[in-house]
Each structure stands twice: as structure tokens, then as C-alpha cells.
Amino acid sequence: MANNKIQAAVQQQKQNGPQKTLRQYIKSMEGEIAKALPSVMTPERFTRITLSALSANPQLCECTPQSFLGAMMTAAQLGLEPNTPLGQAYLIPRRNHGVWECQFQIGYKGLRDLAYKGGVVTVQAWTVCENDEFVYELGLDPKLIHKPLLKGDRGKPIAYYAVFKTKEGGYGFAVMTQDEVNDFAKKRSDAFRGGNGPWTTDFEAMAKKTVLKQALKYAPMSVEFARAVAMDETIHSKISPDMFDEPDETDYVTVNDETGEVNEPAALPEAPQDLEYPDFLAEQPEKVLV
Image (cartoon, rainbow, N blue to C red; front, side):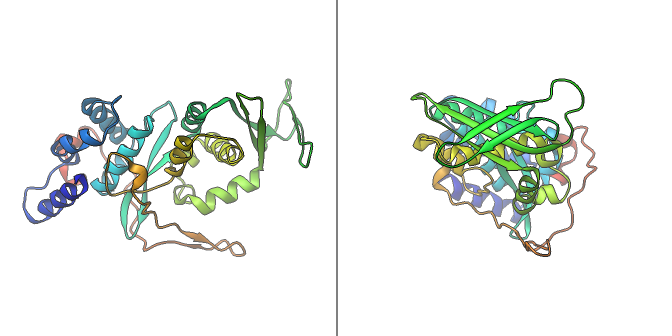
């Protein structure tokens, strides 16, 4: 199995020097990676995307290579490019079971693209500001009206909503207030609490993704879409032809609703924020060792 070979390679690396850079490690696993890739992606393209993700966030080099490859494989099998301006997916370094591991997260645009593939014809998410006209009602005859202010200051965001429409004409929506989105981010994302990651760099997109996930719970989506969404915010240290079959290894933190106290897994020192990165893959292997 591919994972057995990965584990064996890691153990051999620890016992026998010299240790490999992450780039060399990925190169050595190219054959097994190729077996698990979808037919639409070549190993060469996978490698290019992998190195681009590392360039975009050098902190990923602190993660275990198994979890990094697991996140990359998940992105590849879903057809989403991570850590690019497309905003389809993200690779997030986080503390997990006492070590730095790589968590895969679907972005707003990635979730939207998956929804289109899953059978809906319209997917939209919007931000409501305090000076907009916004009315929504629930019950047997739900209603949603949003008229953004066209002139002047729209004010601060106060809510987010998402709507969908199916081929058969069915539709649905979900609404979350600013406070509800903030609470969700605090409970689910240690990157948000630490002031880094997509919740910090692109809060609005992550808020839209969150409310869109809520709305799509009521949509008649395909099994493939449900499986794809289940891969959001997961960590895997194994690779296989179907990453959905691999269990999520994320050790989630808990937050006390009354005190706001965060109970995290075994903490590690913060990963460096100011890594030098001129050409670390070739010249600074000590930063990418297992």
C-alpha cells in the first residue's frame, strides 16, 4: 500500500542520514502518488502545484510530510488548486496530536464550484451591511430581500447569506449574523484565533463559504458532492486512490461558551513567522526535514 511505503520511508529517513528535503521526499514517492491521482492530473502538474503551495506558505514546511501529501492528494482528487489566487482550497498548518500537521480546507470558490458539479444551477453568497435594506422571514413561506445601498457608505458587515436554486426550480437559503460567523470561526479554526490563515487574510470569503455550507445542507445534492464536503477541514497522514476512505485525524479544540477559554491539544511552540525563503528547497533543507 502507498501509505505503508510512506511510513517506511519516514522511518528510514529518521534512522539513516542524510535526511531528505520535502521536495526530494515528494519526488521519491512520485510513483505511489501517481497511482492515487485522478486521471485529469499528471504527477508533473501535481508536483508543480505542490511546490507553488510551499512557496505561498513556507510555514507548511513545519508540517509532517505525510499530512502535507495527504492534504495535497485530497485537493487533487477534488480537482481544487490549493493556496492560489483562485481561492478554491487552502493548506493550513496547525497543531494536531502534538505535532505540526497540514489541514485541508475548501475555500468559498471551491465549494461553489463543487456545488455546480453536484447539480445546482445557481449558487450565490453575499454580505449584508448595516445600511443595506435586508429582510428575511422563515416559516412555511420563507422570504429573503436584500437591497444593497448604492450610494454612500454601506456601513459595517452585519450578516452573510447564501442561496441556491436547482434545475427543477427548487431553492433555499441560509443567513448567519456577523456574531454567529465569528463564533463559528473561533470554535473551528485555531488559525483564526492565532491571527493567520484564510480567516485572517480573506474573512469575507470564509464567511460566505460557512453560510453556503449551511444553505446547501437543504439542497438535493449528489453523493459525490456530499463526499467532497466531508473532506473539508480534515487531516490525513495516509494517501489512497480515494481519500474519502481515509479517516479524519484532526484533533479539534474546544471552546467554553461561557468563558471563551480555548482548550487545545498538546501545544507546541509557535512556528516561525519570518522564514527566509530565497530557495529553501535546494539551499535550506534543515527547514523541511521530517
